[in-house]
Length: 561
Image 1: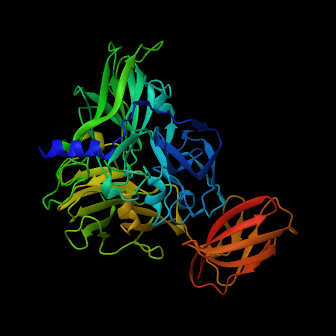
Image 2: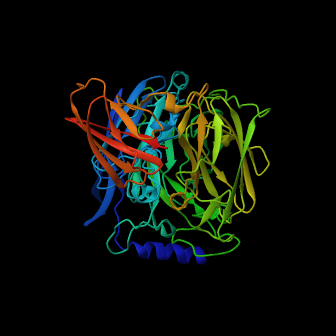
Image 3: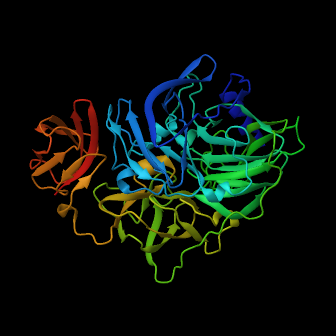
């Protein structure tokens, strides 16, 4: 009876009848230079109501970026917001200076242009803002998009890969929309609707053959327990960051915020039929947001602990040369040996212990000026994460994939044995053990992040950071730092910071504006190219410099000792 009442209330909450809407398939961007424009916009989720949103290259969400392993790419992110932002390449293996963490802010009106080689395996990744304290606000308003990486190993398999036809991106979100104004409410405790590719009450047309669904939980807070209305078996072929060893047969798929999975569904011989991808909230473990209440009870959202339709699937005529079978094997994932590995322990606690909204990691909240752990390039490390709080936490580590060794002391299920970057840490004394190797990139100044991917938790300080020291490090004060055609030194600096922009005349004037890491303006200066600015009056800490010289715009980060 409780479930029935909740469902009725959810329907009353949105008293405007919505016709079914064909989901949009995100446009694609590819090549060696990608241009993204993040800006405010508006979208009609409900007829007659303009909802304020944020999107990349459009009003809501963003294009799918198609990359090939081994290619070099420059991402030009143009911030057309009136506020500072960042763009994090979630899951990609990039240096900290290119990661898009809180340490890579993009001021309003500025452009950030990280450039890197794609070193990741074929899978579905994503991008979204990551400004500390404002991540949830910007992501909930729609600022996110997919990254699809392709490689030769994946291409050797007979798999669906015609984008938008038999290879379909599905961005699932929980949202809170105001009952009257239909504006997005920045409170993820109250989620009262779900979206697929930014669409309410959506449907998609698929051919009668094997179809690949690229599924992402892009929500802030709640978990999805996916299944089909006919309880059919489907096969998961990737985890977050690469192929699984073999397709894993499932009838339910649990994804926490930030997690992705690619699944194969066989619709052969089913033309003319319709099915639904459903949320099976009643089958989530107790205490998981979106499911039944935990041992302490507490209020539920209007759709929590209910089963309902997420996406209607209409099966149509098969394409020419359809994929009709599912491969038996995919790859071989080689897990690092933990013998001789170093260890890092993370303990999650609530404050107070029974809290469902406020959490610490190792007894502290995030501080941008505090490094919580230091390792080095090529070091193998196990992470031992224990969760003493009353709710699960999707735990994300930047900069590199990891493998899950244990969940609550047991071997992980088959679909968690691939390359991951988010893992759900169970509540009430639950534990997860991970193993990773920090290859390729080191930076003794800029850190990588680790945090809960429930965005309200992250913004409230459930985050830490770690340094990966490069091999043979001699100290950045002995080197020149490079940031996309800007040379600046020394770094760290005490008094005079020298700046040179290759390709611009040494007699050209350079305008410099210096901001604190939180975005506050602290200093302006004008110098000639290959000259210096005096930063001796700044307090010790990290700063961002915006550079303007004629039509040239860029920025970089330095440390004042």
